[in-house]
Length: 145
Image (cartoon, rainbow, N blue to C red; front, side):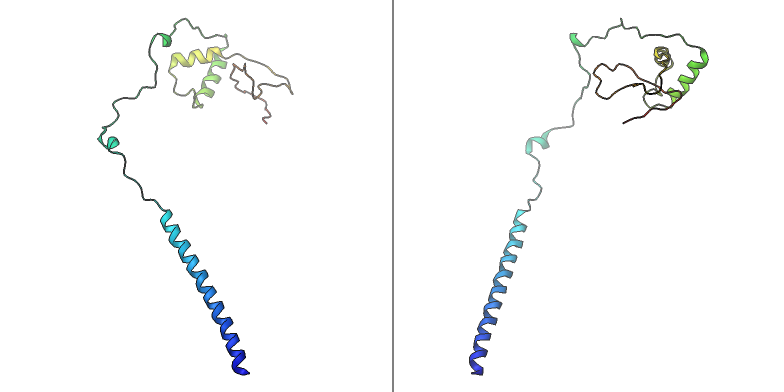
């Protein structure tokens, strides 16, 4: 009887071993399949290789519809010289204005006008389609959200 049980157990063990081998073979096949998924870099098309460097790039449009107008006159609001100096010092710290030449900087400073606001007033609101002003805060605080 001992042989009968041993034979049954051996059969079960052999079946389990063959099942493990089959699973291992499946995982090896998947690994091999994964290797096939990699595509090496393709060489550039022949037409691309024959091209030389770019001859020119233009970002400015030319033609009748892109004529510069000289009729624009920026607004000018009179202010005391000390106010102009404060504005000039503040604008010198700004990346948008610190590279302007003296003539253009004077035009920007001249276009500033003082606007006093009360606590709780809305200065500017996100999504305004008619927002045409730039604000510089001299004193006080704004809540931004």
